[in-house]
Image 1 (cartoon, rainbow, N blue to C red):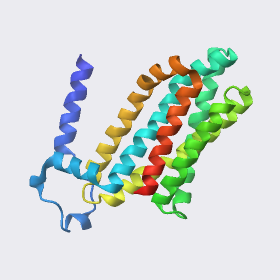
Image 2: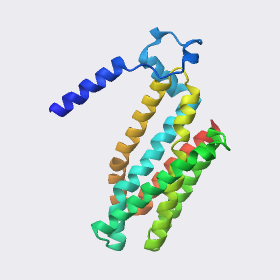
Image 3: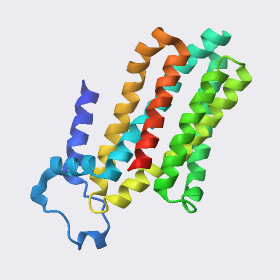
Image 4: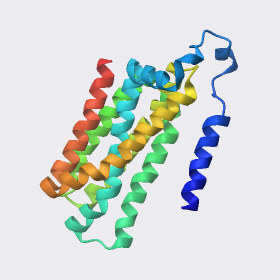
Length: 225
């Protein structure tokens, strides 16, 4: 209880004390009136084309992450009967390659527009999930390779999302990132809940198939917007 109270106090103090992290040049520009309020700022972010694309893509991407992290042990146990220590190596592989992809994303963004990169990497994540869907039952090596590819392209996609959002909402950068973080956390929470329904009903094909459709839809949505 004490920890929960302390967290709540910290959140309230952060909300009241921490300033907006917009550049000084933006502060001197034509900013929205303060009377608009926080909720109107939220509405502008959701209604904005770039904001809607980034929020949907962020939800889908982190749903992919946590679907694999949560259900990968069950897949490995049911398909290959691995021990807990052996199973632990696969999430480590997935997260390690996503970190590598994230580090390389900056160099790729210097050559591609963030919007183009978002569409391409989103499509790549969807394709890699389809490959994983077939590779998971083929062999343990094929599963590991496809998982590594999914982690890498997911890592490439991650930095493009906040880059697009902060470029679009220069004057409300902190608010926009706060909304983005909330939506991606919802994606994290939704993954095990949705997966707990899909996996018993249809196993790996239904679980990974629906996840691939979700990230594919977000990429298509980004392309059209």
